[in-house]
Structures are given as C-alpha cells and as structure tokens.
Image 1 (cartoon, rainbow, N blue to C red):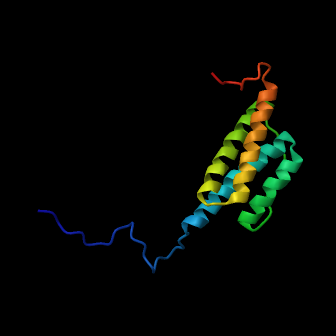
Image 2 (cartoon, rainbow, N blue to C red):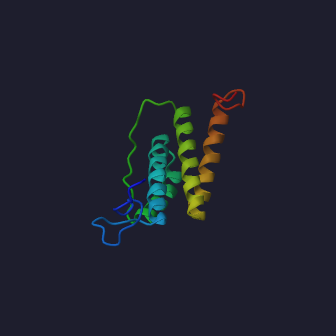
Image 3 (cartoon, rainbow, N blue to C red):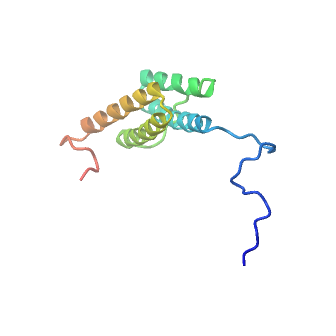
Length: 132
C-alpha cells in the first residue's frame, strides 16, 4: 500500500556530513552572546558605562573575543531604550537559565531590575509607561 522509505531521514545525524554540527550548548552560547551583545549596544546608547563593561565581559567570555563597543545613537527616547533593554535582558535571562550560566543569569536579572526602576522613575505616577 505504501512505498517503503529508501533514503535516511534528514533528521538523522550523519557522521560523515560535509558541514560541522554544533551541540545544544554551543547553540545556546551563541544565542546568549547575541542577546547580551544587543543589550550592550542599548546599554552603551543609554550611557551606562559600568553596566556596559560588565555585559562586555560576559560577551567576551562567551565569544572568546571582546565585543565591538560603540554608541550608535538613535532618535529613540530614553524610556523606549529602557524598554528595549529590559526585553533584551529578559531574553538573555531565559537563555542563561536554560544553559545554567549563573553569572549571566544574575547579570541579566540585575539589568532587568535596573531598567524597570528607570522606567518607574520616568513615569510620574509610578506606573510603568504602557502598563494597564
């Protein structure tokens, strides 16, 4: 009734493949470094030098080389930058937790707290901007 499968599944890893395979840990390292590098760019734009230095240390540890540092200025309002940084720190926290990287998880949580506090200070009523 059905024709038998004649070729191996594309999901079965081939030992003689022409391309390198990365482990789950390597993929998570790449993701975490990417989220932290994006957080670093926003942190540098906000002018938070000490926090940026701590983030840069973690990116260097994960990538094996120091990240490029620049303060690419956008026309974004500080509150928007804090919201973006909070979201990026949250993503980094999730990946750090899944790879059991305590140092990066603590740093990400601290940055989330700092950006939440900055947004609360910016809102005159004490509520976060956009909160319902």
